[in-house]
Amino acid sequence: MNLRSGLAGIVLQKFTNYHIKASAVIEDKDKIQGRFRELISELNKSKDFRVFKTITEAENWILNFNK
Image (cartoon, rainbow, N blue to C red; front, side, top):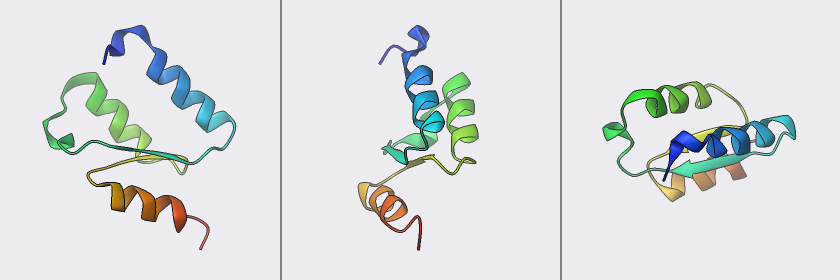
């Protein structure tokens, strides 16, 4: 994945603007470094997007969001 293009940031901003709940699954998220790690840290503070280690965690967060 080429993060230098800025496309990921644009897509995530659209999700936020339109209040679309989304999640990503990154199994080895502890190995992520640099600016991408900073981005994930900031996104995990939001209510619209989160990064999880397993698909089950991601599904549960989306499905139980309004309960």
